[in-house]
Image (cartoon, helix red, strand yellow):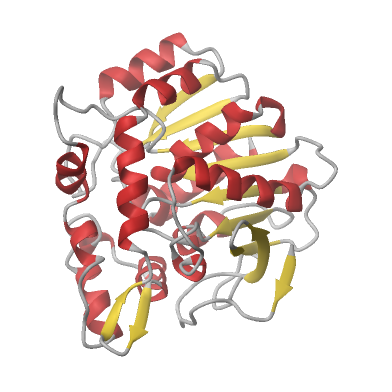
Length: 317
């Protein structure tokens, strides 16, 4: 793990080194196949694995999904947020992507954070990051003390005979369209997020930070840092790997909490995860506990202060 004075794209909003405002997290690059994966540490720089959480973001997101959760942790904890391959400061890593590629990248991060293999790390994933985290935990059940899955990990229903690419378009909607668009400046790009029905009523400094971090200035204008081909490849995996994800959930041995948002990606019911499937896994998987965070949607479950505190409480156990 190589420390760097670079912190990725700069911004002025609330990020938090330690757990206070107005500071950038510390960047550390981890060598993976094809180059360096960017990770960002919030909190105690000397926290041991038992007080360190590895945080994995969603499909079009970045490391800046996590500041509110990081600030909600005790002062002697650290949260290490990755920019997955094809996103944020890791956007230039070569493809192909896919869930297994992310799992391989994250194993390199795990080894850097817990070189002795203590198994004391906590694993945290949101949305697609929860699916990646599930496969990571299934790969080696003794590698983590706890796993927290936030509004993800439950296989998504795909109608029989449906084209996964068509289902992906319908599911991600504007988030996917945004990846192929350019905008005149950062403010115009951030305005897309401001207009999003799941974010607009809940706008705060953390959402602003998240949006501005993703703005990439190019010769053609401002665009998302997320690579569209990477997002599409990962999204297809989410839809076609249902049987494997089901087996991974049912085989969980590490104590795991699934936090569910009752409102979905557009801020309205139903939530992203099928309620009947969530209830079935809750009843049938001994290692899994489920909690619904009332009033939260797929995004505010990380950005709303009260929801972020609940996520942090699940992390610390």
